[in-house]
Structure formats: C-alpha cells, structure tokens
Figure (tube, rainbow, N blue to C red):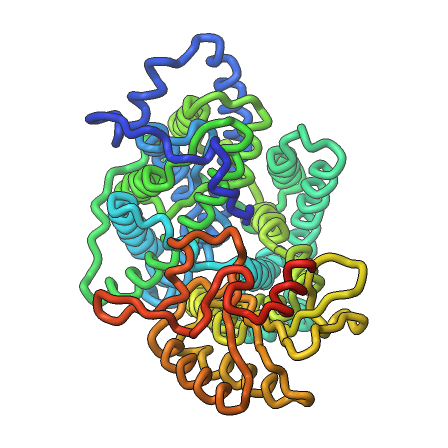
Length: 585
C-alpha cells in the first residue's frame, strides 16, 4: 500500500463543503463543468480499461469462490455507482485480489462442499450490501481515521501472508486438478501429494505457464501493451485450435446473456454472524487501500481528498453491486494506474468501461467461453506477486528490526490462522506496537564532544562526555501509568552512579503529557533524590510557549500545580555554573 501523504500538502486538504445534493452526489459538481475535449481521452481510456476489467473481474470472482460472471456484474455496477457518488475523478473500483480470499473465507464455510453456487452468490451479495452499509455509515460519521488502525509493518505482513495464501490456492488451478483441504498447511500438503501422484494436467499447466510468462514479459518490456488481454487472446486461441477442453483443460464456458439481474440477497439469521465479521474486515482493508490510493493520485491530479465522501462512494458501489449478484469491491490500484496512464480525465472513463462490459454480455456473451481456467489462475497469480511486499519487508529489516518481526508475525497469522483472523491479529498487533513504543520508549543519557555542537546519545558515541555533577537524560514518550515505573527506575539508577550527580536534568521536549500516576511517581522520586543530595529538573526548549508547557503539569480539579520544584524552560532554576555551561553549548 502507498504511504499516506503529509496533511500539509495543499492538494490533500479537505475540499470546501457543497450545498444540498452536490455534497452527496459529486457527479453534480464535475459533470456540468465537463469539457468536450476530454471525451476522446475518456473513451480511449475506458475501452483500454475494459481489456483489464473483464479477465480480472472473472479471475477475482473465482478467487472469491464465485462463478466468473459475477465478476462482470460486479464491475458494471460498482463503476456506475462510484461515477455518481465518488469524489475522485481518476479512481477505478472493481473486484480486488486482496478481498477475494476474505470473501471466500466468509461464504465458503456457509456453503457445503460442492454446494449450490447460487447460494454462494447470494451470501456474497448480502455481504457486499453489509460492506456498503458500514462504509456509508462510517463516511457519514466521519470515521475515516479508523484506517490508521493498520500500521505499515502489520499491513506489509498482512499483504505478504495474503499473497502466499493466494499463490498456494492457485497452484492447483494452474495444474488442472482440485483438492479438498483446510488451512494453508493442509492445502500445501494436499497439493504436493496430488503433484507427486501425477494428477497434473500438462496441457493445463502449459497454457497457464505460457500466459504467466506472456504477462510478466510484456509488463517488463512493453508496459503500454495490455498484457492481460494478450494472454487472454492467446489462451482462447490455444483452447480453440488445440482443443484443450478435449484434453481435460477446464474452460470458462458460456456466460449468461443480458443485463445483470436485480436480486434481493436474503439470507438466514444464522448466516449473518460470519458475514458481518467478514464485512467489517473487508471494510477496514478497503478503507485503508482507498485512502492511500486516493492520496497518491491526489498529488498527481492536484485534487483534494475527501476521505469521508470516498467511503460513501465505495459504500454505494458495494450496495449496488450486492443488489445485482455482485460481491464486495474496493479501489483497484492497478486499474486506476491503467486508466490514469491512458489519459482518463473523469469518471466517464469508468462509465465507458461499464457500458463496454454490458455490451459484451448483451451482444457476445460466448466470446470468452473457450477461455481456459488456468489462464484465469495465472492472472490471479500475477496479482498475488503484485500484492507481495517483499521489498518493504527488507526495508523494515534495515530500518527497525522490531517492526520487521511484527510484519512476520502478521504474515504467519494470515498463513496459519486464515485471512479473517489474520486481519484481526494485524489490527491487534498494530495497537500493541503503539503501546509498546510508549511503554518502553527510546531513552538515553546525553553528552557532548568538545568542539562539536549539540548533545547526543552516549551509548552510540563513546567519545562523548557529560559535565561534572550533571547527567542529562532523555525519555522519548509521554509519562503515563505504563511507563512511569520504567522512568523512575532509570532515574534512580542514574542517581546511584559514582560519583553521585548533583543534578539530573531531564531533556523534557519529547514528554508531551504526564498523567496523575506519573505525577505521583515524580513527586515521590523528587523527595527520594533530595535525601540523596541529588536534584531533578525538567528542561524544556527555550521556544516552548506556556500553552505547550501545560502538559508538564498535573491537573488537580480545576487547579494546576508544578510537578517539580524547577520544571523550568531553558536553564532557569539550575545552578549558575550549569546554566552557564548549557548556555555555551
């Protein structure tokens, strides 16, 4: 996922509020100002986008455990809905590889083995409606900040686990056989057993590998060529002229002709629980993905990001898709990139793509009937490679080992426990990581090197020295109940060093707040140090204002009292020799 941009970027500031229907129907804002000169670009971008929408939609439908046609129904409806309700002019919605396993994890346990595919469709459609309701409610309540619950390390780990899960699940489709197993380990074992038993269909494997190589090579050498479309054409041609169905290779088959059917997805009360859990996970992942993608393209288009309206737009897209036998959708980074590079100027691009898919279903629904299933598997495998965040994991290893192992834990959670429990574990790990960094923050004794300005961590620079009788200590976190004991114990250890310091000066710039537990600890600590002949002082930067300093005081009722005898700015309250030395350095 793309890193969230800085809030100070003017292109990302919230847009001015619109009155009446324009606030909830952004199409009323951009459509009246649409320029005729844009139409050619939008038409060409929309037709180019269709080449990606059709095969990916069908492939991701199968990834979610649904018939391929539902991917086309979903693509049509979500594109039309977002064009009306979505605030961004360039984002493209559709079936997503990261949501497919989550949908499958929600609906497959509710459908018996070899069960009715239409029951799976109804369940997925009901879940899509639930996702839409959650999204619209969150957007109306301005809850876009919940996307922050997924930190980068845990999201990296989650995506790597998801990519691994998808890859293992598609190997059997590439090899032309099916298995029955639970969990990633079970799938790996069953797949290896099938391969060793000679169950692999070499024709299926051959056309799947060829499709994968074609897409990979074209993406590397000719990125302007629609690689997925080329692979689909090659697959259909091979299936037709080599009679692959007669050699045991499964194909898509005939698709239903006509418009997507309107259907109310009614499910039993017993099914609601698992669907809701899955819908909440999908909502969170889709929200995080959308905000990051929208923010990335906001810089390029110089348009503001309206996170709350984005949620409303995606919510409307999910509701409409769910009412026409579709499943949950999110923003697609790959399809947005294709549309943007093709010159898309507005959401007319998405509408053109939706109309092109609809025309395919009405006029030529059997055009894709000979498309081999292994080609769809190859498309999903390619998407899994794009999901993998291996470079990001390596970067975490070089930057912060703790966060690298946090990402590994998230990967293992998804791989071992499953997709839905994995996303829950990722959220919990993100929250625990925040608490851990406040609980055991960075802390250091500071010193200086003669002839060099500033004070630095003496642990990493042995040539640094401290002033006689004075220890400068830095504690990089607010003081609160969880870390108050750690702070107190460290100060006590510093006071017990030989020779005993006369002053311990806390560089308190990072200490933005102190709760009552920490305040009581400080009062007891000051009294204990006074008996030893050591004074404790908090030193804040000279430029801090009175309002910023209030965090270093404890609130008692409506009155405030100083936590320490000398919670001063600069060197006030310190002995003159120490103040002079601090002033010189």
